[in-house]
Image 1 (tube, rainbow, N blue to C red):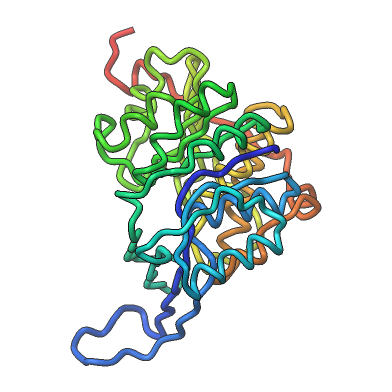
Image 2 (image 1 turned 90 degrees about the horizontal axis):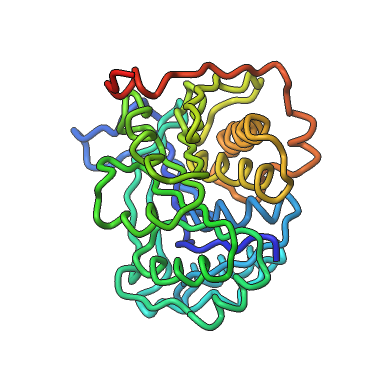
Length: 313
């Protein structure tokens, strides 16, 4: 097994506005509403599969029509679903209010993820044959972190739109990750947070998605800010962009042993391509398209961590 994705998967409903904003002065707004397999686990697992990586998934769906929709999509992608169990509360759902520039306002229903128990024995077997464990952060997933560490796989965790680095909910995910991803949506400058996440963690890598500004990657040596990839693709739907960044980077850096900056480059291409897909994980980027879009005209800008964090060095 190349990669085991651990996280929540479900059905997203994208609500596309005909106007610029929701009109709260009237009862009804006319929209286009589209259902599809999504959420972090869905984007990640299907993203790896589309790139040709042997993929397993650990998570839960309901015994309902939405759950069957997920299982059918995973079966088409040949994703190993031995770790996909049943949530008695039903399949997780998201409603995304979509704006014309691709931005979203998300309303997330994770169903029973705070109380569910993960399949420990199944997880041990899946981790034993894998190179990479890609964790999202449903509450139950924290119990699988020690199993992945014991198995010796590379652990990557996406802590998403983190605000406080000391957030107790995210603490175990942060502590046990070899590679961390987060969205900088709540941070004008992500460098101070990246420094905290890198402190006393030799060998750790931290990657932050900066949206239209590009991406940042940090190691014990420095933090590098990379401009966005210049691709002639429309931005119609930013759902899954962060998952695409992670999938592209981890496929390149961990599974294919490519250099660090090239891997961030390829992660940005995957993210950018994801933003051009409207309400779909059926059409994520494949290896042939990724290779075609890859560019070498890409130079990082390095920020000194000491100056950024007030360190007097």
